[in-house]
Length: 251
Ligand SMILES: N[C@@H](CCC(=O)N[C@@H](CS)C(=O)NCC(=O)O)C(=O)O
Image (cartoon, protein in one colour):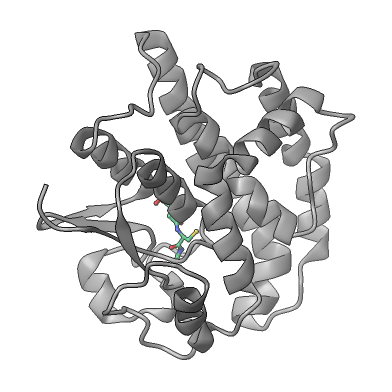
């Protein structure tokens, strides 16, 4: 393949971490423009009409949406595969990616992380502790109860780590930033599975980057990223010093 892979998007996004983990597992080298979508402008809107991250650039292709990016990575760089071999297992992996991108993102990212981290951090609004607590008491429990039923007793879902494990685990770093962790007494199998997946080097690497970046003011994040070893692009879509909502912003 010609051309190095470029990922546009900060590792603080779980969807970005998902695709970085896949690239790492497949030993594909890449560069990152570690932008927060809210700090881009119409230039990035020309790349992604939703002004969201991640976007992958490769070989003249612009690939948008983490699930589509994951599918592209699997096809462009087939080995090792991120899927099990049986069709039913492959479907389960895809379902878990979909479950994470939709229901888990809605509750964990937008309701929980959004209410107590993004509201004050991005929009200078008061934390919505009521919405956060309601989510923790209701839908978070339902999601965790479901994950407990599908979590493997040990190892990963289908032998080696794959797309299903990674898609679920990536959201929990954002929950940790929102000061919540799955209780190992309430959900022993799910909590252990998530911890094992988070500890895998392919995920641990970008989680470390995210942990450093989130503590740093936006204008300084790019330089910090380079300092801590993120393979940063020469060009950036970081344009604005103040955040603005995109066409599909959910909070
Ligand atoms: N389903 C999309 C979700 C992407 C997404 O929501 N990304 C967030 C960052 S975690 C974003 O760019 N938000 C900006 C916005 O919603 O305006 C995917 O999987 O790529």
